[in-house]
Amino acid sequence: MIIEDGKGTGTKVRCDGNNRMHVQSVQEDEGRHAAGVGDAYNINTGNITFSAAGTLIYVKNNEDKDLVIEALAVGVGSGTTSDIGEITVERNTTGGDLISDATAVDMNQNRNFGSNKTLTADIYKGKSGGTSTGGNDIIQFYQGTSGRLFATINLVLTKGSSMAISYDPKLSSGSVKAYAAVVCYLKDPESAD
View (cartoon, helix red, strand yellow):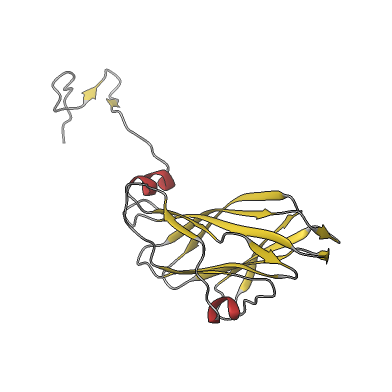
């Protein structure tokens, strides 16, 4: 194959005296690309009042594409605690009242305001005293009251896989409000691994 210098023609590449081709490319983050084509979502439980340890959220991917959990946010209101609260992410949860007593999350929205695509997934809001079973703990965080945790986690949920997040506020009295938000997108199967 012979590559000829086509500088200025608009139909051929430019080759310089050192045998280098000159090209211009655009690089775009995969999550940003997914948002642009309507495959990125924001999921939020809304406030949950905790008087004891419980569950925050359950997400099971039912899409044919992989669901990338890009980031997680957990906000905690004021309360009286005996220690700093614990947040645990569990992979492939299979049971518990988080699933059997399913309650829809408050927000499940496409991050592209012009897209009408919806995420095909089981997404449930947890509760104080709620349970999740059958999975394995994969990530643990600490979060005190009157604060917000934001963590980039980049977990991949293939079709049929799931995750749950539980929360132990370590209360000494009263209750505390908390929420979980999941920032996610569907992976383009054509993109490089």
